[in-house]
Image 1 (tube, rainbow, N blue to C red):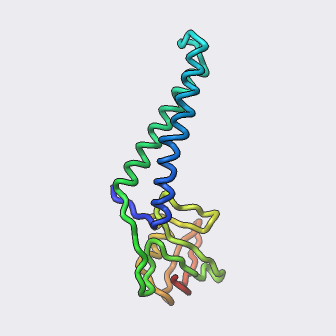
Image 2: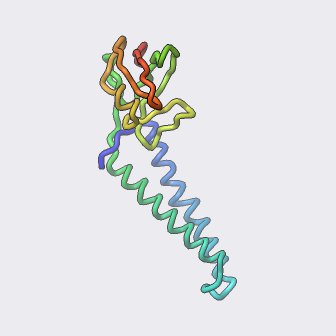
Image 3: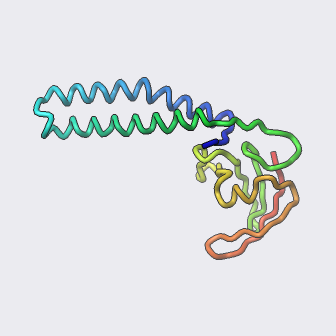
Length: 150
């Protein structure tokens, strides 16, 4: 499935993949070998935990490889239209907020990075400065006005 990323977001995924394939995989393999040395693998909790950690790691590696293979890097275009990679200043129910629109794996609300697939992100994509629209939050309708697009 195609996923859109900023250049930085894709780089972070590639860095994570490299770390998992090298550093983490070596660490897990070492844990498995150490736990296996204790003998009787049937009742060896440390061995089973290490094997489970390896399975999780392999699953995460597969997820990252799929995301990277399906990735489309979005280059920011001029013109003031909100797109992936845009930083947007909005008036959210009378309060100014600044958000960056990013891909789903880059989203971090604590850093004001919202996914283009999120409800608010989806409403913002394709809009321009001075546009206004209604938005519902927890059953309450609020008015949003786009103040600036960078």
